[in-house]
Image 1 (cartoon, rainbow, N blue to C red):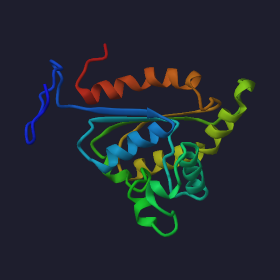
Image 2: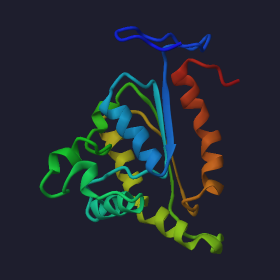
Image 3: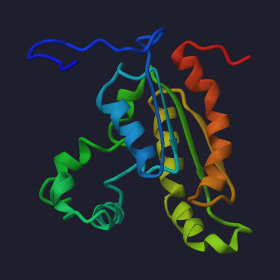
Length: 184
């Protein structure tokens, strides 16, 4: 049935509540925290697994531009030039928006990349390690702001599903609590 202009379609989902949670890996991990920070109160819980957490940190605009280019897009189509449109970059940066995460149940995980015994995924270990300090910085910033976060910053790990699988299970208690669900 088509929705007419001005008419809202009702959800066919039964028993769906008003509480929401958002979670993601890698760029999705960035997106989960950025979206929760940009829309305070929309998400009761948010989780980031190996996300970019400080987009304006030294060297990060180059990394973000490379990710956008990898998707076949011009880097400036995201937020413009990191130098000329600094305000736009800051407005999408979880680290800079950390205070707006107050009241959201948070889970942040990141591996250090090394030491690592997954020699078949050296690139994943290097990428994970490159962003290691960002997770530490965001967790410290949240603590300084009095924003509770459950963090799992661990040695080793790679930027891959083999590391993220366990993180999904570990993050379920804060996500479920945010949704008002029991975990026992």
